[in-house]
Image 1 (cartoon, rainbow, N blue to C red):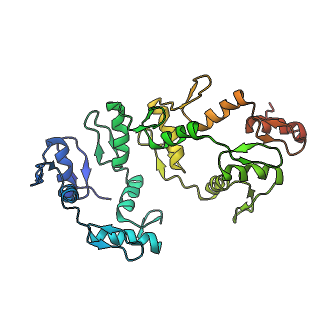
Image 2: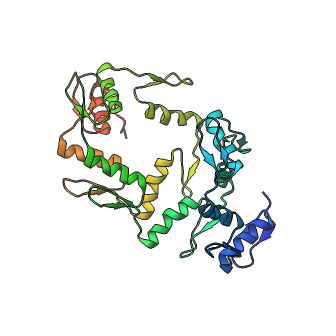
Image 3: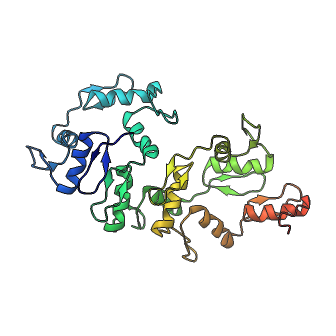
Length: 315
C-alpha cells in the first residue's frame, strides 16, 4: 500500500491526504468542530455528529425484526446483519469476512501495521482505540471496574467477572459418580467425561477427538496456523485474543489473579487455578491405565511414561 503523504513533524506516512490532516491534529491539538449546544469541541467531524445525538436522542430507524432503534440508517443496516449473518466485507489478504466495514479496517491494521491511535503522554501508538484506552490506564492508574461486594477495582472487565466468582461461588451441580460439586452445569458436563471417556468433538481434517470444545478449537489452529492477534509492543502473534491479553501482562507486570488463602499473585488465571490445588488437594488429571490422580496435566504426562516406557530425554 503506497503512502505518499508524510507528516513533517514525526515522519509518519499516510495513504490519503485526509488521513494526514486528521493525524496532524494530534500535534496541533486543533479541534475545529464545535457543538453549538454545549460548546464541546472535537478534532473530527464524525465525532461531533455522534456527540450531537446525546442532545437530540433521535432514533428514527427501527429494526423490523427486533424493534431496536438507531439514530442513523447505516447503523440499522449494520445491525440487520446480526439477523442475516451477512459478512460482506472481506479481507483481500487473508479472506477473513466481517459484517462491518469498521471491523475490516481494524483487522487490516494487522497486515499493514498501521497504528493511528497515539498516547498523548508517552507517544506510544496503537492500531485500535480500545487498546489505547486500556494503555492510558497505566498512566492514570484508573481501575473503572469495581466489585459491588468488596469494592476491589480492576483495570479490565474480564478480571472483575473472574473475581466475582469468589463471592457467588455456589456449587449446586454434583457429579453422581464421585460426588464432586461444580458452579456451572457446563463444568459438571466436562468433568463427567473423565468418567465416560466421551470425546464428542472430532477434527474433520485428522479425525483426532477431544472431550472439550476449547481443546478442539486450539487443535484446529495446528492446521490453519492463523494468528490474528498481534502484540503492539513486541509483535508476537497469537491465535486467540485471550492469549494476547495474558501475554501483555509480561510487559505491564500486572498480576490480577490473587490467591485468597495465601495472597500469592499470578498473571494468568490458569496459574492461580493450578496453585489453588495446593490448598484444596484437588487432582482432576486421572491416569487412564491405573487411575492415579494428579493436580496438573504435566505431572500426569510424566507419570504416563511409567506405562509407556518412554524416555524423551536421551543423550
